[in-house]
Amino acid sequence: MKQYILLILICFAFFSCKEENAELRDGYYEVEITAKYTLDGVNYKDFIHSDCVKIIKTSESLYVVSYYYNDEEFVKALLKVYDGNKVKGDYAYSLDEWTKGSIEAEIHGNEIYGEFKGNYLYVWGNSTTGGSKLIPLEDGRISLKYDLKL
Image 1 (cartoon, rainbow, N blue to C red):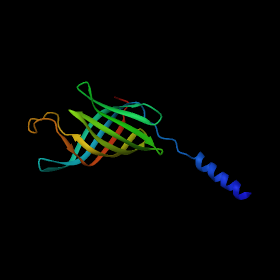
Image 2 (cartoon, helix red, strand yellow):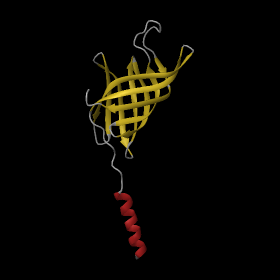
Image 3 (cartoon, rainbow, N blue to C red):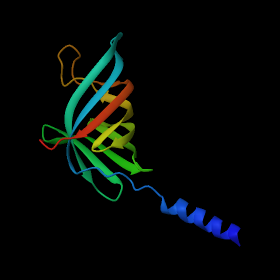
Image 4 (cartoon, rainbow, N blue to C red):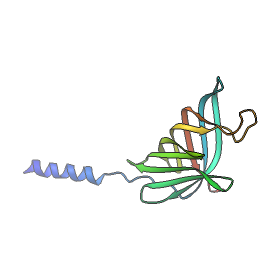
């Protein structure tokens, strides 16, 4: 009988200790992307881009991330929060057609740190490159930080 009571207590403790998923605030976040890439035979190691994105909670653990350029939605991501503070999602660029990539990260307070895989928009109509280009980034890192000032 003691064994059954012990088993019931262990099961209860296991299921009652389930960790709540972290939550992000709706609003604007500073985003910083770091990576390396090769363009026209030249290796660039310290690509850094900072900008601002908007995050909106759509359901209990789903968030939509939007970036606008010239009043048009240019980048959109769908992020899912799971296992407490882990984030997984997909993003897409609208440049003639949608170009896709993925994000894996963790939430720490109101900040998200992680990795992304896929392409990135390198330049907005630069005369030397003949226009905007999507290039594959290697070792892509992303951080998003909630900013009350924005």
